[in-house]
Length: 216
Image 1 (cartoon, rainbow, N blue to C red):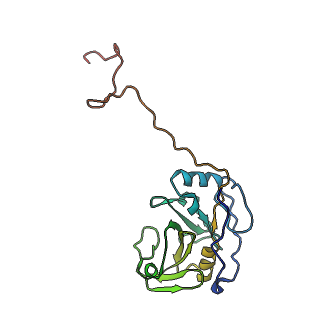
Image 2 (tube, one colour):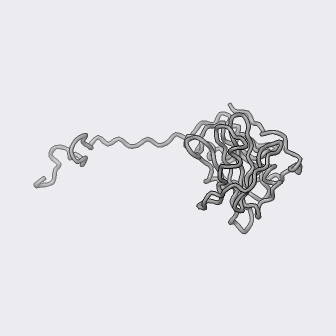
Image 3 (cartoon, rainbow, N blue to C red):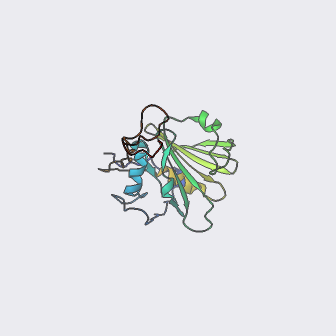
């Protein structure tokens, strides 16, 4: 069982509390209390079934945004990713959350391109500012806040003109690990085994004796 944990104290630049965002969609989650809402149970099962490491599944709370549930899933081999979208029009803004196993340092902050919007090209880094909680980066009209905690790297990114910096930082620092409880991953459906497919030849089905069409 994985206990809920937060990623550390909010820095001076992000002392304002993030408003609670409650969204009633999908199956009701197994537990709710103060802070970011966990994934609905069915979404969490689907995420685990994709091979995501349970230790990497986190949720955030960002004023004016909600999780696009179908976006939650595997990122890379076993890392986690999700997209948050506005609750009100215009709906063109995206905020991306990724949680990856590994480490992070000033060198990566200064050189690793920012992800940019879905379908767009990564943006080169224009600035990298470390603070008490992590690293704030910008480039190409995009911003990202990166937090290193307990062997994983959590990054939250979005457009600089549409997402307030302090809100972005507060959401990243207040990210919450999913408490899966007793939830087990959904079992992928097994392929149907056919007994009429030969192991040699062209692979065409084998007609039972006496049922072949005339001339066959």
